Structures are given as C-alpha cells and as structure tokens.
Image 1 (cartoon, rainbow, N blue to C red):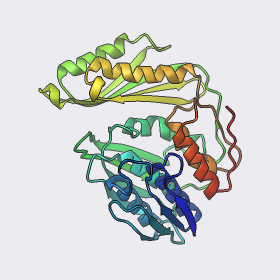
Image 2: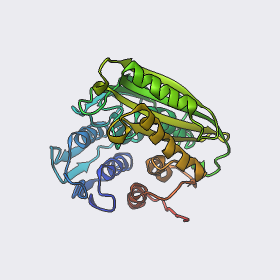
Image 3: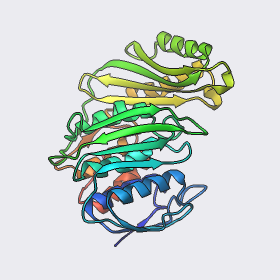
Length: 337
C-alpha cells in the first residue's frame, strides 16, 4: 500500500484527484494523509468528497475515511473499472469540471461506455469553466490518441457562486488502444480567437461585454463571440464568465478566462481581465496555457512513448502533478527551463 502525503508541494485537492485516478487505473492501493494540508481549511470538503466517492464507485474500491473534513483516506481499487450511469452532486457551487477531472481518465480505461451527471458549479473562481473543458481540454486529449467523439460533454444548466445548481453531462467511450505520446511544442500562428460568454446579466451589462469584445485590439486576430446568457433586470444579480479560446495553425488551443466579482464587476473589467491573461499566454508562444499544463500530466504519464509540451513558467500545480505522476507510474519527466 503506497502512502501519499497530501501536504506535499501544492498540497491541495489536485493531489487527491490525480493520485486516486492513477490508483484506479493502475490498481494501486493508496493511503493518503494530510489531505489538502496546505489549505486554510484542510481535509475533504464537499467537492473533494463527491469526486472521491465517484472514483471509488467507478473502480469498485474498498475505502475508508470518506467523510467531511477527513484528512486521510484509504483506497483499495477493485480488479475492474466499472461502466454504466453515474451521478455526483457537490451540493454547492463546487466545480463540476473537477468532478470530471477525477472521473474522466478512469472511465477512459473502463470496460464499457459510461454516462455521468455532474452537479455543482460550472462557472466558478479557481476552477476550469465548462467552456474550457469542452473547447481546450478535450481537444488536447485528441493529441494523446483519444478518438474524436469518445468524450462528449453537454452543459444542461449553468451554475455560479454561491449557490451552484449547474449540471453537466459527460459520455465517455473507453479506449480501444493505448494512449500515445503527444507533441505539444510547436504552436504555429494564432488564426482565431473566440470569446464564450456565459451567465445571467442585465441587457446593459451584456451590451458592454459585447462592445468590449468587438473593440478589442490587443490580440493578433479579431475576436469572434458566442453568448449563452439569461437576462435579469437587477445589476446585482449579474453573474458572468468570459472564456477566451485561441486556435493556432498547428491545431493547438489556448485558453484564458475571467468571472465576475471584485474588480471585474463591470463588463469592461471582465473582458479586460480575460484579454490580459490571453495576451500573456500568447506573448510566451506557448502551446499549453498555465491551466492545461498540469491537467495533461496524467495523460503524459499514462501514454506510450515520449510526450513534449512547451509552456510558460512551470506552476506549482504542475510540479506537484509531475511529482506524483513519477511516483505512481513508470513515467520519467524532464524539465528544461
């Protein structure tokens, strides 16, 4: 039984998600201690508990410690990854996309097709938004040999802070051949940039966002836009997110986003924050943005052959993902800075 210290490096929920996914796929019994040890409120919160229970159900594991605020869990995966229909509900605005992050790799190695109903937040701070999952993360999986259409996602209902209430459906077909090494190191030219705008807002707020997108001159290409908004009459009810996706001539996708709150409570500020993040990514000529870099580490480790990616400064999340991928798999990582 392998012992994992959940306070290592970044010391957050990513350690739990990645290590449990590796354990399920590679059939490794785990004992995880100091869960989220570097957080102000350590231990399992609703989002982590929902994801963990989903993974345990998927791999038919024996588990202990599955309760709120628990700082240690033991997981002994079953001999086969299950398939079928699964539901996970965070019961708060905790991110649906992080439920997908733990379950998706496991289901790819399953014994049949699976459908997931994931309930919680779809557009919340500090988590990948749904549009990022769909338009940046999933296309990146194709580079590892995940067939087109093997993973389909649909946002049934949007969910923002603080109430959540969002719902995402995910259908996954298992792999019929091994993952292959991906080359994510030749960006090419930026050919297109699209702004995906989601949420609820007043007509005036929506118009301000649309104008800022149309008038943006900070990117190499003109921005297209796609709006999925519901109008309300009170400005205090506005809850919006802008996800920018840049596409390149070599087929890479780079994302940046901003969500309403604090200094981004105006339409102008919201768009400006997302654009500033995108400009920073594009100036570095990266193929993988700061959020995708740690999310693909598990697939690099599980793939056959050599993978390469060109990214910006290695984040602590990525260093943490690499540390545990090296520990739990046979993968060897080399960082050239």
